[in-house]
Picture 1 (cartoon, rainbow, N blue to C red):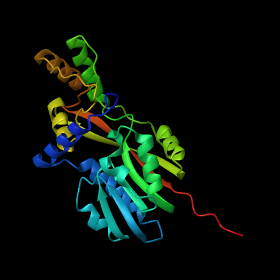
Picture 2 (cartoon, rainbow, N blue to C red; picture 1 turned 45 degrees about the horizontal axis):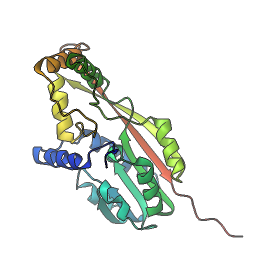
Picture 3 (cartoon, helix red, strand yellow; picture 1 turned 135 degrees about the horizontal axis):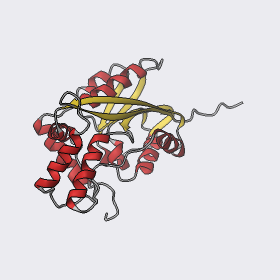
Amino acid sequence: MADDLFDQELRKTRRERALRRGPELFLHERAFEDIIERLAFVQRRFRSALLIGPPNPGWRERLLQIADRVDLLETDGLLQLEPGSYDLCIAVGELDTVNDLPRALLTIRFALREDSLFIGAVPGGDTLPALRSAMRAADEEMGAATPHVHPRIEPAGFTSLLSSAGFTMPVVDVDRVQVSYKGLADLVRDLRSMGATNILASRSRRPLTREATASASRQFMSGAEDGRVTEMFELLHFAAWTPAAPVNG
């Protein structure tokens, strides 16, 4: 669709490229370990769990320790879900690039049974501030502003979306991960290995000139200490429940 925010075909291509290169999963693994810790406090065994878009296939085996069945699904298959199929849904770093997030959350809500858990993590609004500054410098050199970095959601906004989709007791926590880089090229290499480079439908197809690339690199390094720049990745950890069945009598 012309008004889609993200190019889903490009998303698939870049994630496949990341798998071929050897994916960089340090952020995903950090988020997943947090989820496992939180699930340990839930005093129940789940009958059927849905793991959306797992970057690491080994996660399924970990989840089978707390669930009788674990199904894997990419985000483009959400509309195929049957209502009331699961009592646990986990999504790590997948929901930030769907074109209709409210609809996706509503679909997940109806795929869960009563009193079921939805838990996961998505990138937050303060992600990649140094990269954003570098890309603004590149735009100034190119003479035109174009979108380079994906828009991100704020914690309060995500809490509101969960509530609007019909989830109860939504909780969103912020984890700010700092990573040190020798230069802009190293950050871009990590993003490519995450499959997390620009897939905005409105992105410019015009490559950066050598001068624009140099300007971006200089701006990125302007905040360096001892020859390294600290970039920040913000993760929003969330959890919410579907309403429990009403008690009769």
